[in-house]
Image 1 (spheres, one colour):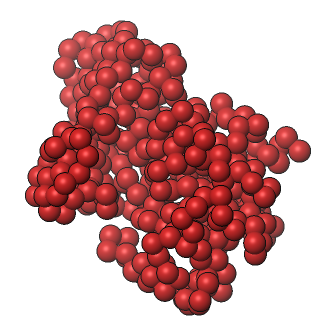
Image 2 (cartoon, one colour):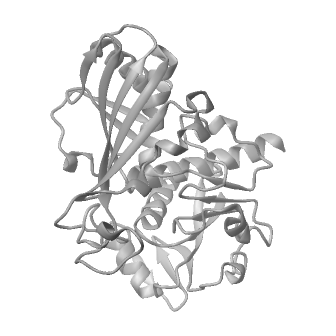
Amino acid sequence: MVKIGINGFGRVGRLLVRIALEQCGKGTAGSDLPIVSIVNDPNLSPQCMGYLFKQDTFYGTFKKDIVELDNCILVDGQRIEAVQETDLTKIPWNKHCPVEYIVDTTGEHTTCRSASMHLRDGIKAAIVTGNSDIPIFIMGVNHTCYKPDMKTVSVSSPSMNCLTAMLRVVHENFKVERAMATAIHPISNSDKILDDITGSVCRESRSAIINFMPVRSAAPGRYVSRVMPELEGKVESTAVKIPVPCIGAVDLTVMLGKEITYDLVGAKIKEAADCYMKGVIRYSAEDLASSDIIGDPHSCVFDAKAGVGLQKNIVNLFSWYDAEYAFAHRLYDMVKYIASREVCVK
């Protein structure tokens, strides 16, 4: 087993543990699947960790037995150490058992300097969320560019995973000349329930549960060239926060290098979803609504009925994503991929 530690036991962190346990249950004896050995969250006691892990409003009750002890939780008999440390340099990742990889789901440690604080006591790599100066790798898009000597990597954000998955397929088949994306973000625990004081952007201090609003800082387009350098200067984006939990979407309009039809673009996306982007993209011709996407593990659920052909070389494409469950799956996949590359090098 590949043993990992998680910093941050929020919604994505808890789902990551669920996924790891589910995958280990499906695996064969001796298989190198990630398994969570320790969780750090200074805001949660082991009792709260166990309760929030078991009960989830959107993803349902975890069916296996959970026991909360003084310094750990037992999930279906598997021991997960529970730590409440605020200083990254003092988290005892290897106090009880050797941990190889750290997954930081807080979204706070997005710089190389900050993420590197996890790299001690034999930790091989730290995988973080968010965008900064850390190399970004997105499963199905550029993850094969990862090199084993890279010690801090990012899986970016849910909207970036959705957007770049779509861009990869469209660009490889039709050549993207220009693109404009609107990322539609669900609410999260960092948003305001009621109007309150926040940072420098005044409207982000407004209630997120009864308003929707532009959020420029969350627009993913400026990071696309970090993942797909060939699209440097060709992709712009905006973002909107909506009062819907868990599920987001990307509305993408692209100008292509050749004349096409919307149906042809859809056919190529379906082909990719069934082949080289399987598990990353799902093609759907159903009449979907946001709640239909809850619990979908794909980075990008292409909604064939929601898009349209605008001109001979311009199409509008619409895709959904589960910002929590699908993103947790990509974190799990990235850990598994990094560990497999380590084995290959040996």
